[in-house]
Length: 70
Image (cartoon, rainbow, N blue to C red; front, top):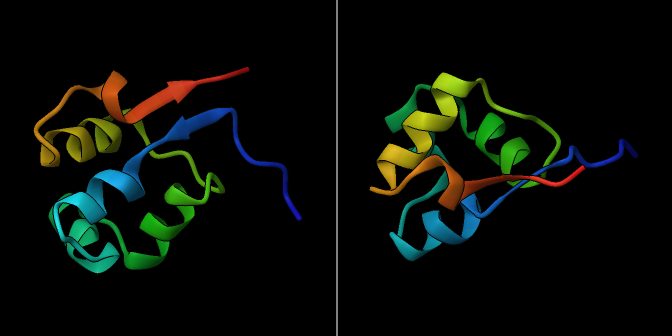
């Protein structure tokens, strides 16, 4: 199993709090449901532009969604 990336996130928690599915979030930010799942599981790190789009979808800033932990 691959080691999780050093960027943690609360995408799943924010998405569920808004009552949104992975597919719905993916549709809003231009990603597949599978990619959203990979982001939530820390197996994939989104581009900076996509990270901003995700944060914007949750009406918050980037630092409230993603955190770098070396």
